[in-house]
Structure formats: structure tokens, C-alpha cells
Image (spheres, rainbow, N blue to C red):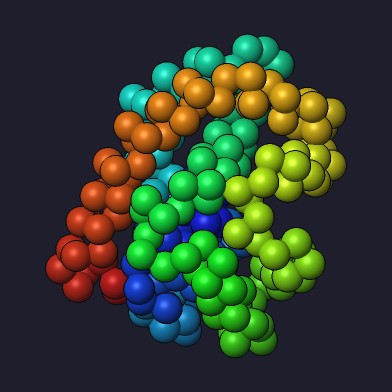
Length: 199
């Protein structure tokens, strides 16, 4: 899943949400001097990624992407599922999408001094493009995929993927609808585990 989903699945805890945003920008074990809630948010992010990659609906969605796009299915589905989430956000959250998006960016601004360089750069991109709210717009998704493709070391088709995703949107949206309630239940159960999960 991508940034919007990780932030939403972290629930109302600001530390978990911040850790969820950090998850793509840190490697290895969380820094030992980070607050326990932030470290737990990083672990939750990684648990969500593992659960997502193994879910039957996600595997089925991957199979709908033909070569050469299937090789990049993980990236494509992460971004497209955030698009599915954003365009129907009222179904999944009591907070309006714009309000949620503004709050997420403000959380990152409030902790800017502690952000790793990659996330600090991404925050500037989020602010310039009103993310993650504008993930609801296909053209924003297309630009995001082009940017990701440009950052990868090898040649890739990500910049040409938007029409491919749009052509199979109905089936991908169906997989997302079947998958996301399971993922939300998984994240909720993970958060509610005994305090061992936060050490």
C-alpha cells in the first residue's frame, strides 16, 4: 500500500501515523532513540506490506497486469490502490479527504527536523501537489508513476502505465474492495496486540 493507506491504517495515533510515513524511508531496525510509538508505526508499515503482498486479492490483481508491467506490479498496485482509496475516501474514513490530507502534511511539518532526507524531500513534493488528497485524480497518479520510474536505476515502463491501469480499473477496483476490509482488520488487530508490539 502507499502513503494514504498507511496513514489511514495507523488509526488516530499520531506517532503510529508518523511511523507509517517513515516506513518507506528508513532501512533496518528503527533507531533505538525514537519514541516507541513511532518505532511501532514503522513495524506496522512493514507488517502491512507483508500482509498485502501475500493477500489472494492482491495476487489476483497482479495477474491482470501483462508484461512488461507485471514486473512492476507491486509499485503499480500500491499507487493505484491509493487512488482507489482516495476517490472513495468517505467510505473508509469519517474525516473528509482534504482534511485528512492536510493533517498528515502538518504532522510531517511538525516533525520536519526528525525526518530522514528522503521523507523531507517527499514532504515538499506532497505540499506542492496537495498529496495525498490529489491521488484521487488519475493525472496525479500518472505523474507520480513517471516520477517513480525516473528514480529507478533501470529502464522501466512506469511512465506509460496510467492507461494500462485505467483500462483494467474496474477489475482492480473490485480486488481493492475485496481486499481493503481485510487489511484494515489486520492493521486494527496488530495495533491492539499486547504492548510487546510497541517495544
